Image (cartoon, rainbow over all chains, first blue to last red):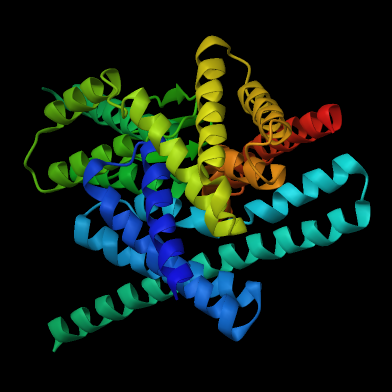
Length: 153
Length: 251
C-alpha cells in the first residue's frame, strides 16, 4: 500500500515535469497530472491483481482517453493537452531499452521477445484511445439524435 | 473591405492558424476542423483546404487562386495549440473580428513564451527520477537518475540550438546519457546502469509524435500519419543507437 502511494506521487510529478518540457498551458498542469494519476492507477491495479500487461495497458489508456475528454470539456482546451502527458507513465520505456541493449550485446532471442512486448503494448495503447474516441462519438451522435427528435415533435 | 480582400484575409488567417497548429504538435483532424470552422464562421462557405504535415493548400472561392504555405520545422509547444483554439472559439462567438484574429495570431507566433530554461531542467529531473522509481522500483538511484536526465535534456537543448541536423541532437544526447550512467556506476555512486539509462531517456522519448501518428492514421489521413510515424521511429532509433554505442564502447 505504501508503495502504491509513493508511486502515485511519483507519477503525478512525472506528468507535471513532462508538461514543463512540452510547454503545457499553466492552467492545465494540475488537471493533466490528475488524469495521468488515475489512468496509471487503473493500469497498476489491473496489472497486479488481474494479470496481464496487455489488458492493463488497454484499460489504462481507455481511462485516460475518457478522462481527458471530460477534462477538455471542463477546461475548454484541446484533448491532446491532457492525453499526451498522461501517456508518459504507460509507455513501454523499459522494454524498448532492453531491445536496444540486447541487440548491442548480441542476445537476439531476448531482444525479439522484448520487441514483441513493445509492439503489443503500443497496439494496446492505440486501441484504448480508439475505444475512448468511439464512445465519445457515439455519445455525440445520440445527443444530436435526441435533440433533433425533440425539435421535430 | 470588398469581397476579394475579405476572402484573401480569410485564407491568410486559416493558413496561419493551421501552420501554427501543425508546427507545434497538433493532430491533423483538429487542424482541418479549425480551418473549416474559421472559414465557415467568416462566411466563406465554399472554402476548401488540403492539409498535410509539410504544407497547407487552401482556396476561399472557386474563382480565386489557391494559396500555399510550407511547414519546415515541427516542435512541441502545446500552449500555442491551445491559444489558437481559444481564439477560434472567441471568433466563433463573435467576440473578435477577423482582422483582430489575424493580428493576434501574428503577434502570438512572434513572442514565444516557453517555460524558462531552469524550470525545464527541473522538469527533466522530475520526469527521470520519478519514472525510474515507478518503472524499476529502485529507490536508491533516485538522485542519480534525475541528474542524468537533467544533463541529457540540457545537452539535447544545446545541440538543438547550435545545429540544424534533425535527429543528431537525440543521438548525441543518448550517447552522453549512456556514458554518464556507466561512469556514475564505475564511480560507485549508484547501483544499476540500466535503471539510470531508462530514467535518463524518459524526457527524450518521442511520445507526442507517436500518439499523433496513431491518431492521424486511424482518422484516415494516410499521408500525414505514416510520415509522422517515420519521424517518431527515426528519433526512437537515434536514441537507441546512441545508447547502444555507449554500451558497446564502455561495456
